[in-house]
Amino acid sequence: MKALNKKTIIYYSLLAIPLAIVGLPLYIYLPTFYVSDVGINVALVGLILFIARLTDVFTDPFFGYLSDKSLEVFSSRKPIMIIGSIILILSFYALINPNLQYAKIWLFVFSVLIYAAWSMINIPYLTWSSEISEKYEDKTILNSSRELLAIVGVLIALLVPFIYNVSQNPQETLNILYISFLILFIPLFLLSMNTIKITTKVKSTKFSFKSIKEVYKNFGDLKFLQIGYFLNNLANALPATLFLLFVELVIQEKQSSGMVLILYFLSGVLALPFWYKLSNKIGKKKAWISSILLASSAFAFVPFLQEGDLNAFIVISIISGFSLGADMALPTAIQSDLVQKTKSLNINISGLLFGIWTMITKFTLAIAVAFSFIILGVFDFEVSNPSSSSLFVLSLFYGFIPVCLKIVSIYFINKYKDQKS
Image 1 (cartoon, rainbow, N blue to C red):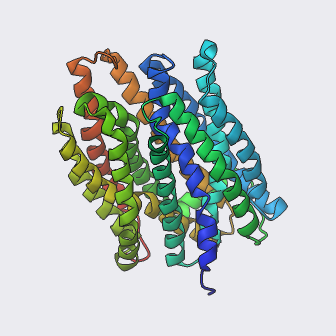
Image 2: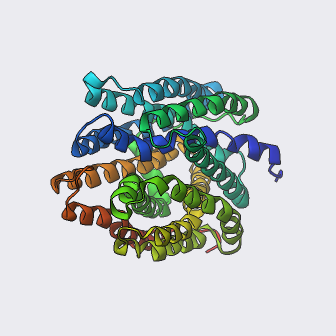
């Protein structure tokens, strides 16, 4: 079997940088921006973003099918990615520059559009990892390299506001991130379009529940993997959504939030080579479970943190960040292995399966925003004057519940049978 070319790995991975810059404002900054700066009620922001992200339940599998159909008709998944790139650029700009008179409708409409556009790019992009090479180790390195550069993109998104001294102004921060996104996205997207060649011409399977059911029937591991991934992703989404509020109101070190995030993601970058080597030695499943246990052991101390416990919070963030690389790269690498196996049924729904995968990712983020923000609203949470009960609920959702979810996720992940189990 032909060895994986290093240039292919680089060209494939580079697009992850600007896509990650989109992700950080959407998942961390945007909810807080619409609450603090735009002035929408915290519970209403949670509900709007939940409903907007809920549309992915229907659109992501459909875009996955369109990706497969594009491969059949054009011998390439790129046409749908090009359309998505145009929508992404326009909707990102609109989302961070809202019309204040129609702020609620604006948030909903352009959230739906940017999630759809991101899916039109990301689903074919993830599917490439199962098509560039069929080797077990190659899919690991493709996914690891992509997620490594995704973390680099996140670090860029964190550092740029500090470099330009706008980190304390959410509106200016989002604007400078949009400019950074444009500068990187346009050339790297064009580079990917020109260099990644998936020439296999296949017929897409008709979008039907019957073909999906056949895949799940023959590959029972898939449902266990997806349930475990859902629970673990939900555990990650809760603290990601509440991070800024937790640092500002519980630790009361708002000015240190950027530094903590940088240390968290930097530890993820440094740890990725370790997880890659470990996964090749003991298997992707065992390596992933090890990373979950590491993160859980650190995050178990979060509910005990109080005002001024910045140093303890930094230590917890670095340790949990160490598991970040595995949490980002290994699940999708395992998914790529399973997608490769499904082709033995002569059913081509690779894009559809990755559409379901990204649907799970965004659905967990929707649940995280909805339940945490809505429940905080029930407890009369106010950023300017939070009650002690609302702060307790904030700590519960930030630290305790994610650990419980991760422990349960291990049960389902362990049911998946890795090639090296």
